[in-house]
Image (cartoon, rainbow, N blue to C red; front, side):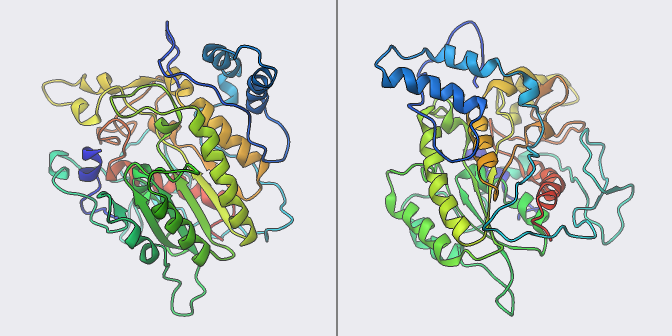
Amino acid sequence: TACWLGLLSGPLAGRLYIGGSQPSGSAHLDHPIDVGGQPSPFGAALAVLANKSATNDPLTPFGAALAVLANRSATNDPLTPSTSAPTTSTTQKPRPTAAPNPCSCCKRGATLHVPQNVSGTCGKEERPCFVGKRPYREWFGGGFKESCWCWKAGTCTERVAKCLTPDRGRDGNGRAMFLIGDSHATMYVTALREAIGDAYSLSFTTRNNSECFRLNTTYPNYCAAVQNGIKKNLRSGDVLALAFATWEFSPYKLDKVRFGRLENIREYALMLKTWHTMVTARDATMILLGDQTPLAKPGLRCVSTSFNQDDVSKCSRTVQWSNFYGRHFRDQMKVLEQAWPNVYFFDPRALFCTAQACGAMVPGTRTLATGDLDHLTIEGSYYLWPFLCSFLHKKGLLG
């Protein structure tokens, strides 16, 4: 987490692993969340667990539950951002597609993944798709210099009202995008600012290790303040974006502090159901933001040098590992996306992977994308913007 603070400074401010044994702390989901719509394979798997629990049969071992998920081939969970087509909503107004495309950028740097609408050269008025910067040690001296990112407990609640009051322009009719969550939401700030441009005013309030994905937290006043702030300011045409660390929803232990519980998926789904009720009533949209693959070692330890060009591989995970880690969480997000027409899930993992591995660098470059185990650098966040912009544009949210 300390690395995260330093990573978010500078001029651009703005699974489970299936091995030979089961990870400790494995758990089960009591029953799937009823969100309406058609059942999914993931929901059916959870229903099996629920039926066994209801009849007092022994609970299916966690490994068997994973086997159910694993039987869904990788083609059902590709390493690509979610592109499920929205269905017609009876409560939400259709949003026109913008023209011309607002996500155009100029190519600077030979990244492996190239955004759509890329021009070959960078003119004075064009935004680059990617900006690299080195050396990295100069980026670890201070915190993210914005008060709406709260690091110190005890000072967060008082900031929420101001942070969630958007600037809607002189006529007061501009659209707003609200971002809430933990440090993994904070790492999206640079990407979102670039992606939405002038289409929305970005307002955010994020807290270190935020528990606001649960119904019951250790700091209810803060979470209640966040909910009240959104309730007060959310309007028709606005967007609510949420992001929480994937490790919160996985018992796999990344390190001494980064491990969670499968039960948290249910907690989050219930909380999202509450948010969705509000968002739908306001004729707004909800975006669920995912994570890139967490590394095997902190990214800063794997920066290649002239003396050791192989350091980068020490941090990498295989694509197979990436596909399984957090898969049950992503499956639940996709269930919600399919059930709710005004909800979209953005999964960025593919953008930080090659065909073989998911590593610390922006693929195709020597620019550090992930500084510690799971937080993006400013460069990593900036690299995301044209892909995130195209995602929003395809969903009709940049019209």
